[in-house]
Amino acid sequence: MPKSTLSAPHIDEALREIRERLGKKLKGFSSDFPTNLDRWKMESSRPPARLFPVPELVLFAFRNIMGWQWSGPGEKVRWTVYGSVLGEPIAFELRKFEFTILRAIDHQVPYDRIVGQIGAAMRQIEELLTPFAAEQARSGNVLILNHFSDFESRYRYFRDKAKKAFAKSAKPPKLLKKGKKQEKNLPSLRAGMLTAVLNHVHAAESEGYYLSTAMIEAYFSALEHRLILLRAFIGEPLEAGGLQAFLAKSWDNKLKAVLPIGDDHQAGVTLGRLRRIKERLRNPFSHGGVENDGGSLFVHLPGIGAIPANFSDFADSPRFTFIPIEAESFRECCSVFDTVHDMLSTGLLELPYRFVDAGVDPSFDAETLSDYAGVIADGSDAVEKWIERWGRNWTTHANMDY
Image (cartoon, rainbow, N blue to C red; front, side):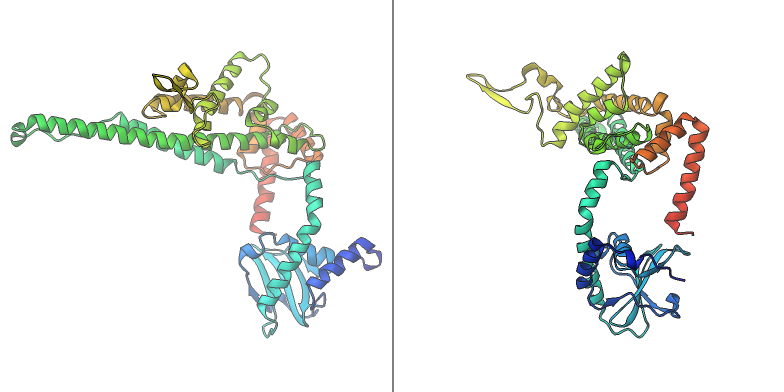
């Protein structure tokens, strides 16, 4: 049976004012619902997802603010709220297959009116909750969705494609076997073959270059996302505003916060190579060709012509060679990326990385951070059991198998 949420005698003045404002947007809506009506015998419809991208706000408005009866969870249904509009029974629920509106079979109230009024009410709810959301974010009482596998897969996809392209450039196309009729025109045939080989190599190297720029961009996106996730799973507490401050840091400073290298010389060298890739390859192709050291600027030397403003350092510019990223540069990038991956998934970060790799969505509130730290302190088996339990709960919730 539906259960009631609010205790009417104890509604404070602030809630009363909010309810009155919301009631103006929901004119004609009421908490009345026939006690003997089976919702499974009602007509169901699913409005476009874009109209109600956060259906939980519907639950909050009608259950928590307007005091409608509700039930849930149930089989393939997370929650249902019950009421009426202009005397006709209506219910809203979140099913496995999207937000659903339930109405009586013989309904008369226009569908567009219902959707329009609820949409207007949701905008008012969002305005009400905006300061609350900002304060929660400042306090770190938030969850961030773990999209690491998506970022990592995109990076691996372009890396694999680039590797194949550069391998193709090193393998000339199969040339025609020389026959009797071809021997008469051997010089022109050889010239044609040479042109074909050069065109093949250029096309393959260009493809490798294009894919490498996509790989590098995808890698640094994956890296920054990984660092945000690791910041939670290392379990260190955050002060008020600490999460927002961390998110505002550059990737370099995020990395330093997650992986203090101290006197580790080799780690320092690796991170220096990573910064060089960022400055020399990633930034120019992500920021319209602008190079921080002036390599994209050419000054006019009287009587000589245009020369790069960074002089001999232009040798480090991606535009110094005909193909900006060649096979050797590609292999260097991959080597550095692999080493950084090892640094962020072994040693002190081995267990925090297990949470990342398992797809756990991290929360940043003090209690949860302390929980992560405690589980990691208990060792690998404790982490695996925690992840297994989380996975079962996540699957149950995602599939609504209540």
